[in-house]
Amino acid sequence: MNNTSANAQAAAAILAQRRLQGLQGPCLPDSLRPASLQEAMAIQRAVMPLMGDAVGGWKCGTPGPDKLVVAPIYASTIHRQAGSAPCPVWASEGAVRVEPELAFLLGRDLPVRAQPYSPDEVDAAIASTHLALELIDSRYNDPAVLSFADKLADGLVNQGLFIGPEVDGDAAALTRVMPIGVRIDEGPEQARAGQHPDPLPRLPLYWLVEYLREQGVGLKAGQAVITGSYAGTFPLPVAYDLSLRFGDLGAMSVRFSPRSRTDVDY
Image 1: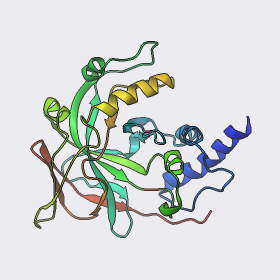
Image 2: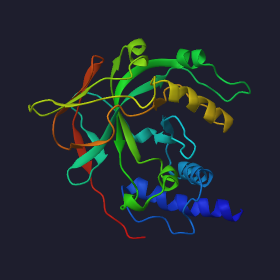
Image 3: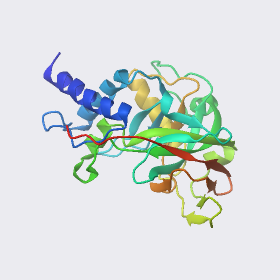
């Protein structure tokens, strides 16, 4: 094992333990911190087999010159709207941070192959489109000192996904701008301006399929892919009945229940 892979494994062991136990701690030791996007992805990949969990989905976004937006979402952290059952989350100060998104659920595999996938082929693999909330949490306790590579190594602050009701897939695929309305219990609806970071919300999905194919990774039927928040990141309280309206596409309801966690110092 070369030094780079040994460092990636050591960094992954720290981040995987924090992720599994809902722990937060300082930046990785300087000798283990990723100095590039490539080193960050090596750590992210090294975390995956330590989780003891299947990959149930992916988060992605359009990349930039110094930005790569891709991270797995683990199957046990994906929750679906089901009656009054609460969604368990790692919370801080009585709230969990969320991002309102669309989740594209695949109905067929997109296995690794030599030739690229066309957008039409990816579209044909989508079984349904759902309202969703990305659940946000960091394994670090001082985000101000983190580089983008630090965040990428840790899965870009993802702690899971809440999948709401199915919506019209054709309409959703064309929806870039939509207001997000939030209601807590029986209180007034709070409106947030909403705009997807890309011209069309499926564009990052097309990129993800090709990026993973080039890495020798296929996507599988049943996996969910989210492609960017319509309203940034904001907190929602736990132990309250919440409803969120996604423009004219539809609405979802959710109640979060907090999981206990402990800060760590290593």
